[in-house]
Image (cartoon, rainbow, N blue to C red; front, side, top):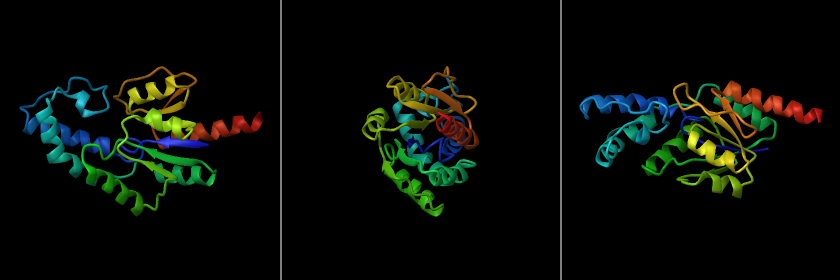
Length: 197
């Protein structure tokens, strides 16, 4: 089984840290500019910031927030269990697009926790293309747009949805999970079904 896996908001709990700094920035630097859509996963869509404001936030807080982030609760435990079951896990992430050092910071965090994925794709804009190239069986991501795009290509997805993010209808190709316990249960039940057939 080949699993494509996003980092931010799935493996690394960076989105929660980013949101704290987004609010601080909006209050202290942008005269309390409000969120326009809580359901959006990325601050570029969640706020009505212009390009200069986005750039100012990136320069001031993006790397700082990345360095303060940790692994998602339960990830390491489930990662080890899935690896022991023979799952291949391939990182497919946009990390490094805005600030190259964020890639290096993610590598540091993974090394500190002895996490070695089977393959890495960094700075990726088109995750579907990589999923198809790598014959991914399942993609785990927290961005509903990516989930929609990949699932439309008949690749199964696990939508790692934060409580406030947009809800998607579950189908044969979209399944919602909210934590790594959900991910583990999904794959154990899938494994049980396959063994019965």
